[in-house]
Length: 282
Image (cartoon, rainbow, N blue to C red; front, side, top):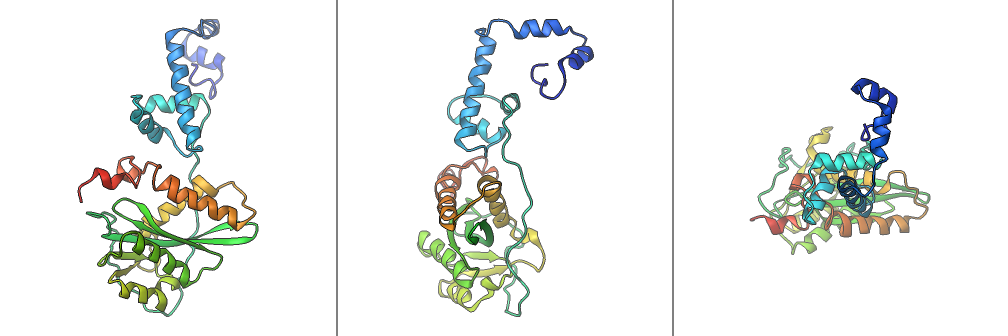
């Protein structure tokens, strides 16, 4: 009854369960120092601490994994009950629109990825995309490169303009960060930036394999779009940014400090992207 009193009235639950309201109130008013209450209080404190440390981005599965790593073996249902009891809700999902424009006459590359988002090791398959983020000064465009092996963002760039230089800068960062690998399948949508001469020259110069989604198929680049969805839900949704410079700093911190190094990824067995390669065999 105590767990559900935020959803149903005490008189209604007492009537359905065939118990007295006075008995419930008497039980609730017992010594707050009892072992069960103390254990639940400690659980709630630990759950809230993790929830707040991750700015409300974690739900029960990730909080459970975080607590387990700290030596506290609570099951997921117990953590979920604690969240409900404290009225703590992780940031919810929202739908976001595609950004790039594929209505052009530039040549496109074949789809080498074919929706196979698995990779046997790092620098086998990278996916890329562009999104836009709102500020009072106007749009800030973000391009990223994600390694499908660890889901780590290995390259990124931001600009006030959505030009070919934006995606070239993101790819150049990935190349330098990963010591200039060759033979990597680099997948994107058919946006004009990825079909541009500048971008294609960069691809050829470093011996990369260009791959592009089929026309109008959003699932072909689902992993890159999933990252943007996560970023917007966890960072920008419901927040008003007055200056692009402020948002730039927030995006940098989210990608490099939080997402890559700390955030537990569901596709990696709730391990962070930066930790995942250390736990696997290439």
